[in-house]
Image 1 (cartoon, one colour):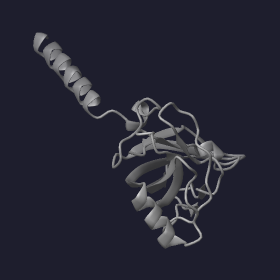
Image 2 (image 1 turned 180 degrees about the horizontal axis):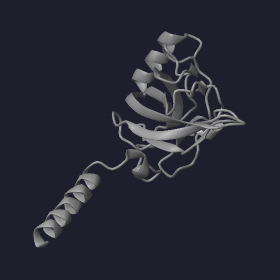
Image 3 (image 1 turned 180 degrees about the vertical axis):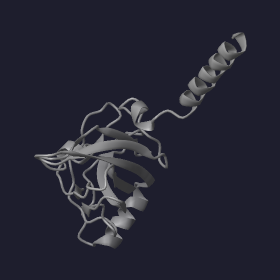
Length: 189
């Protein structure tokens, strides 16, 4: 009897230790703890106006480019891209967005990047930066994403030159009236 109890306790302790070594990334994701470049963040979104379906998403900021290099890439993408406002510089982020349905019947696409507030940059003090309108390098992170697929592309922001720790926010609720899910935070540095 004592051996069974000891085995049960040891098993419980091992499973608790394993759970703390690999926590769900999105649970730790917040404005005070944004995901680092290269760290995938797993979450979920709910789509559907009458019958909602839950989809698993994974978002990874693959790389960021800032300052002169960002401006050079924007000029290469379109010579009509303007210089940033005085005291500001551009930040480009290359993002991978993956979506998977939880059920075979989950076939609704997600409108990625076209909503006005889906991707937003925040200052280190969490003040929202003004949105910009520039032509990003190809491919842009925009369009309809089908379940079971992934999209990779660029987004652009203008941030204060003095801001050493800007943050990017993904808000699925702005992906249309049917998109619901958790707001996620990512480092742009």
